[in-house]
Image (cartoon, rainbow, N blue to C red):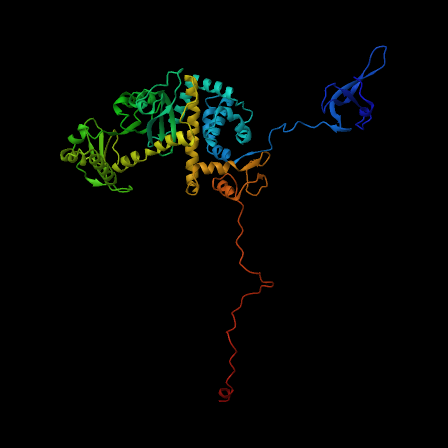
Length: 523
């Protein structure tokens, strides 16, 4: 198609030609450079057109520019992603020992996004991946909803690698560390997997659930391993399988009454460095046979008034009985309130109950200090906080997947998210930030700290690469070690400085100088 003369006459670079592509639009008249000459036998040489270098539009030549945002955004949300990344290096290292590089990075990216964006859905993970520094830490990942679902299925299908990862973490537990073991129920109304079932709480909840067991290192304050069981599986029946599958061989297992040591008798015999500390029921005959309610001392170093008794029993095991005065008063008040409401108080039953109010008796295969035994179980509530964060802070109270393998893969990634959350909470608590704001408010503040992608890797508060970040957010970043603080100058004294400061000399006495006594000089 012939190019109009007024288009050809527009000034443009030399050795170029205008080509009409025949399509309406701003790019209709392309300007191509001459790339060479084509020689034809028995004919005149013909020019060869090269690449497009611009267009003729609105009566002028417009050079060709690169596509807008061809290299992605030039600024991203930094604070929350950097906070999660600062506590994740060893987890990525463990994953790289077991999974391919791309799979390990995908696991970390999804887990990190679920931490900094609670209740995020699979459809929105890709969007938040592109707008945060997670895309800089783990670049080039495909995170569409379909890709994530397929990836979770593959993770769930490879049970050996999941077990290898959990066993690697369990092997790093110190022998003197205490491991709290407990389970939680999670809603899963799927009809196509065998893990979803009605638990013993179904009559009150009215939904199917799955059971998830966690092992928690009390000293390290983070989960060690996890495993998914059917919702109708009680904790006692899953206890031995949990120990075997994750190959827990060291430490002291601190569990509740739902995990009796009789269920792991064989596992304890095969693992000499694995021990247990478990409470027994108040009506256990061993309490009366060993006179465990005749206390022999008061525990020191605990935030309560607790009396105790320690006794070695047959089989080489030990019983530790502790009675908290505070808990005894609470239990007695609750018991009397129920009897008053139901109008069925009986003095004989009250006398039997009164002796056991506030009492807890532990069984262990180790000779422990009673104070250590009591504090270990008291600190077991940290695992309950983990489950609370798991369901509330991370919004993981529902599975939102259908198949068995998808569920297993999802819970593996959720475990990584839970470890990151525990570490972030610990770091924020040590920095003193949780005394000022809540954990959710802290993440919200940090997410508002945006930074240029070409900025130096070692951020500083005054490096001019931040995007509209507020001062109180800088203070939080500095407290967490995510930004170097600006050296503060010494505050100046109030008032105008002296123009010519001189050496300080003793001040002249106030008032008029005294005259010398001339009459005294004549004497």
